[in-house]
Length: 630
Image: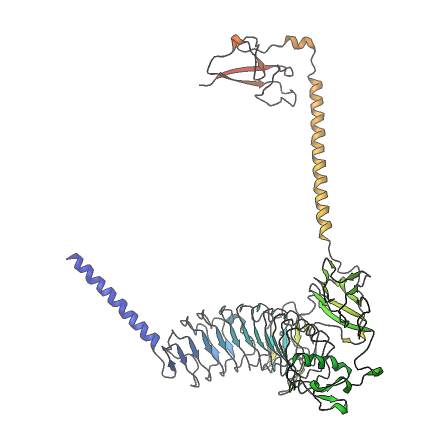
């Protein structure tokens, strides 16, 4: 009967487990009345229902949950606990002004978080730290007034970041994108920007949208580090000037849109460092069709295979060419100084700004294919294909400098070798300006947005002082200062630098580690030699003293006897002489000698057993002990 009772007990347990599974399945498969569930309850939509939180009974097995268009004002701690399979969460078009630190606990599988058009005034950095696998973050249209350092540092896998329409943005940090090494798409359009923010940490960025801002000047270091960027969009941003080689860092650029700006000219050969660029939009700009435009016309004709170009832009000046497409301009249409069809000069001046420790590329644009020579600021001559430590001249004449130091600053002159080919330019003088790292951290956007002008002056504001409804926000910007623009750079013109820079030879001098290592080795060797010399001298002195104390006469030697069990030894054995008839029988004995004289010579002092072919004469008294091993 006992086995039957056990069997009944097992059946009850199985029944309870089945019932629990059914209940759990019902809970997972249920759908709240305010929501619409699709598929196998994996898609849940609870939109436009006036909800203030996630309704009870929402399936925990959902993969997508939309709470858009409700009245949610606060996301509280553990509000989404249990939704471990959720991949997409839409909280857009609510009134969310606060997200508690533990609000997203349990969302280990979340890939997409949509928070656009809410009332957030800052980035919920701590709450986002619970989403290590997040790939898309949408923050468009929030009244965020400050982007603090490391705002997205806990999102190492983020690939898309939407910061568009941040119309109330007043201050940003240069370190706001720290940790986003995998970011591919960045939307920073209509964000109250005056300058291009620091993007150097976005090494994987492929698409960047800066449209709708007030970026009047694009500095030549604006896109440093964006070697993988493929698509750059700067539409309607009031751009009037693009510094020389501002696009030289974009080696992978394929599409460029500069339409609806105030650009009248581009620096000569600006696209020389973007070999993959094939699609451009230059329309609705006041182009000045003078000699400076010839290179751009030639480039457009090489890249565009069609007979017309609607996106190439049209001339606004001079009056006789007004309305003519850049694509249709001929060399005869352009009047240049001195009657030339193209710009002629014997010297070209270029300015390049880099940060200390970065790499620098100094192009040599001479209009020739012949070899070139470079003359460095200290007078060193470098020829084509030459290579030195940190310095290399490439086949195209470009001078590459690795890990630039403050002492590399100065004027570099590129001179073409030979005069067999025609040239429109002669010498190229490139001024390298080196800025010391770590001098700036935060950037103020300053210029108010055109659509919604900001009444108050934000020139003195930072993340420490930004105010929201009269309350000072407690946002820390460690080791940073508020400035009005990106890191300072020297304005460049055709006449060269506006500010001369002469590095101080005694300031920021690099430490020569090689000499430190050599000095350390020499010191160690010298110390070792002194130490062993001292030991050797002490040893020699003691040995000589010992020999003097133990000098013996021949008569004394004859009186010495070494006794083995009271008999005179005759045969050599372990330093003693034993006669054949006195040698111990098997098993062989083990002999040991105790040196009783404490003043014996160093070579025997303290030694209990030793071997020698000759009798020992230096010891005054010796006791021989004979022991037989069993």
